[in-house]
Amino acid sequence: GLQFAVPLYLNHGLLLIAVYDIYVQQIRVQSLAPLLPSSCKGANHAHSPLAVRFSSELQALTDRLLRRQPRRVELFGVSTVIILAAQQLCINHSDAARGFYYPALVLQYLMLARLLSQEMPRLCSLRQIYRKLNVLVESLVNRGDHALFKEVLCRASAATLVQVGTFNVRRLLSQVALEKGLLDLDCKATMLNALQKSGINRINQSIVQDLILSCKGQELTELKSLLDSTGDYHCLFKLVYIDVKDEGIRRRVLEHLSEQARAVRGNGQGAVGIKILSDI
Image (cartoon, rainbow, N blue to C red; front, side, top):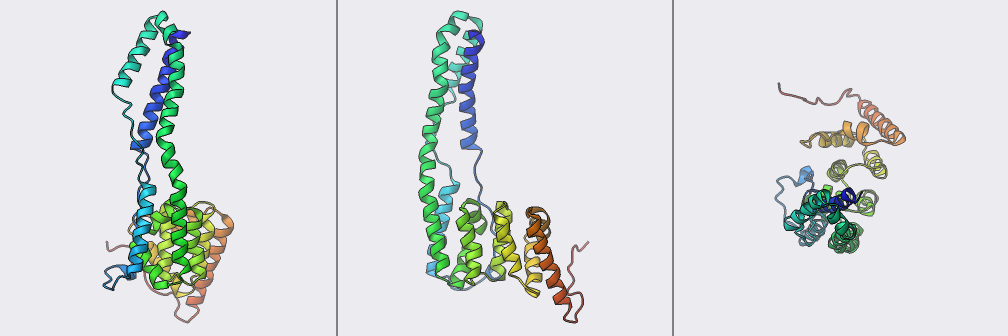
């Protein structure tokens, strides 16, 4: 029994080492490429110092949330060799297994405590970072300055903000900004694309609904063109039929699209525009 129990405990220690190494080195949140509003591409206008400050501070906070820099513990190497040697010794000699029983049992818990101690400081600091991010975004929205808001969206990655921010950040940048009249067509497309890139969960679906239902007539046609020309696999079709899981929200969005399409065609123009899918 002990000849196999002790190596098992030692294996638990090795497993914790391996899991932590993967967690630190491989599992990292990646910054998401933004969809720049069309009016920002190649723009040669004077940049507002206030917009530069807002975007710089937002970038600094999102970078702190994206980067994972715990104090690295070099657990591989000599420690691993010693544990493997102890395992082999316990399997071959029962006396050695009895001698290693309690040290191996304690080793698991010591290893777990050591690994947690490396990550807890970072986890504890996240609350303060999230609070600063919420305050900064709320300050931006409460200013009610459309030009400032749009320029910050041009400079910062809305997709990354939505990805790492809390629900309140997403609500401020979309629903609250919409109520304050800060979102023009380009900003709406930017926010919808940001939600798609970061992943649309159950709560975010109501934001998608509000943004789409706020577009009317020709504006809705232009929104579709913006979402379909992102250069990646995200588009309006995917947004409505795949990303939105709530049947009620999807039905309301489709009814709105159908109603606005009839309104545009009812102007006597019939089908409006031709979209080229390929030049082949």
